[in-house]
Length: 426
Ligand code: ATP
Image 1: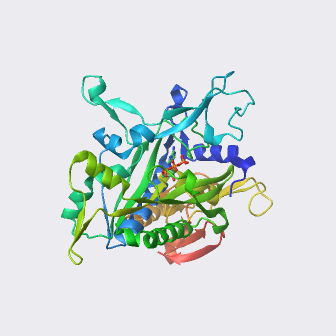
Image 2: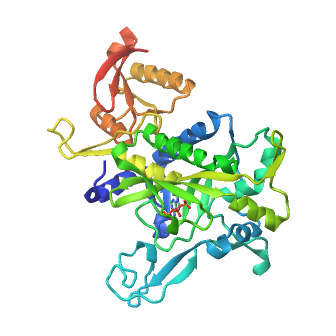
Image 3: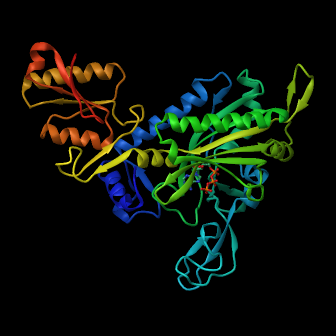
């Protein structure tokens, strides 16, 4: 686990090992914008797959969607984002730096202790233009959340997927917010990925489903191996609820800089569907065959962030041993991440660069790949160094092919966490 004083070390590791590093760096970067390298992208994909499996594939009552990022701006008018999706912002009167009021201990002073100006609402949606003319009529927005795409497609999906309330629609995709103060690596960025699911229910059953999803989502983070003591639930006080919410509980992680939200589970009532029904003039209600009633369903929404979840997983799994793991060696980093999230399932390492060993190693690589495994192959450098490199990116197992392997058709399997070595048959 990473402590606050280890954040620089962790950030340097993330860059050195191709996990996460600043974007556009050869041009000096772009604010808090990050890229995921060869290791990071694999882990991120596995995290998204895990979410999709638990939310869609393992259930009867949830289907998936991939909606557009740029929607008709009428969507954002109806949802309230054009009027309400803003942060209260103040400006330091000396440095002219801007801050979110929510982040300040004393709303009359900047973190530098200078007086601040009058608080103003700042809408965090990114604007753009659709088509070749740049005017008010062509103004559009990059979506600040993925869920509105779900609401506007709700009826279409209901009619074509053979689902009935209660049921859900899940989506993973990029969202954009012109955050006033991005920071803490990928915790708060202006371009990020969300995993959201809208679960449509009858009003009478909303509380029951809300409790169900809070518990299910909390369990998902535990199943990914995050330590329980670093997770907690935070119930929003009524006065601080978002404009659409009838109740929200966040799942928070104990980041090195303090507790922070990973996911919010909200009871959105039927606010969004009613708004879209009003503004589009289309009927978004459902008809219950049994009770012969027509109603606009309520919605329970678990909304999580891919980047924040991955950051929490990395911080939780990262271990640094100043004197090595055997207490007598060089500094060592081990990423004790769940094998299902590791960038590579296994590494294959010929002990030395001899043709017979390379040939046998390549055969092993091919058979592991045929079995659907993602394999790292590395044939040069000392075997100790190669193990270390794999420990650093969390590869759970290394298979070493040596001269004995040629005779007994066995390889050494070395475990990342215990460093135990056992001979296993090919
Ligand atoms: P915060 O209060 O931290 O700004 P939020 O409550 O506005 O977050 P939601 O609108 O509930 O966030 O979005 C759902 C999830 O999307 C969050 O729990 C978080 O994981 C992720 N998320 C939101 N904004 C960002 C961001 N700027 N950078 C990275 N992830 C984000």
